[in-house]
Every structure is written in C-alpha cells, then in structure tokens.
Image (cartoon, rainbow, N blue to C red; front, side):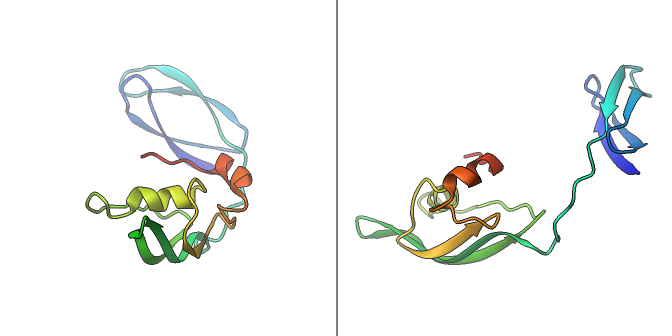
Length: 132
C-alpha cells in the first residue's frame, strides 16, 4: 500500500490517497469538486537513507592565483536538502560547477551519486538537476 498527498491543480487543496503500485484512481477534490486521475508509481527500491549522495574532500579551485574554493570538505546524505549561502565571491557557483563536472578542481576529490564528476560526467548528468 502506498500513501501519497496530491494537490488539486485547480485550488491547490491537499488530498491524501492510498493505493497499490500502478493502480489508477479517480479523485474528486472535496473543496472545489474538480475531478482528476492519479496513477500510483511503481514501487522503487529506496537506498539506505544514511548513504552519501555527495562527498567532497579537500576541494580547491584557483583562478589566476586567487582561491575561489579553499579546501572545503562536506557530505550530503541521500534525502537531505542543502542550500549554499554566502557572500559574492565565496565559491558557491564554482563548487556547484565542479560537482556537475563543468569545472575541474585544482586539488581534492568528490563523488556525486557514487560517480566522479570529472571522469563520469555523461553518466552523471541525466541524474542531476541544478538551479543557479
């Protein structure tokens, strides 16, 4: 049994639905009375929530002798939401570009979804989404 919360496209009311994988149901919004269909997704094997989605160790990137990223290390677990905040020039965009394989670090290493962005970019890109 899968339990989901879906939103009515008309009034944005939340509707809780229960069903089995691939089951189709007809919904009626109790607020605006709009009708719609929902198809439950196939069951997906979920990874260990403690597994690491992003691993960064000692990342350094310099431009003309100026360090844009200065020896940063961090991990992001699967399912975690992370925001990069900091002043202009702090290295936020440069770090994201390195994590997506657009730029290469001067030193350090990283893995994203178990892949090396420098060596496996074509395999990694279909699994990423980045919003500047």
